[in-house]
Image (cartoon, rainbow, N blue to C red):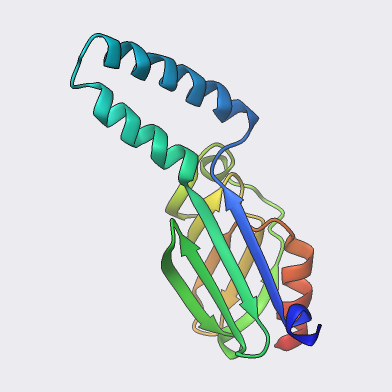
Length: 147
């Protein structure tokens, strides 16, 4: 039981209800290209797969005192709690974040997001990271209590 409380895990996927329409249209076009035996089907399938599979995986481990962020299963950022100055929920969702997903430099910060980033990490070295998690209040509480 203690192990379960020492970890916090979040997986946020890069699509929402509006993107389902885009995915359905892309799948229909892809099927049409396959039926017409067109080479265009393959890039469309790859783009659709990236949209469907894209996710942000954030793991907070209080035993190891680390926060790990993965994008598409690739570790992008691992930081110790000692390097996190403050964790907060951003009050200003940026337009580029709200309507897209991916890894971008937005507003002076590295943003790893699926929709609007809802966790801002200010580091002791002055860098800022923005990430999307599914329970931002729990991440903020645990990170600020550990600091």
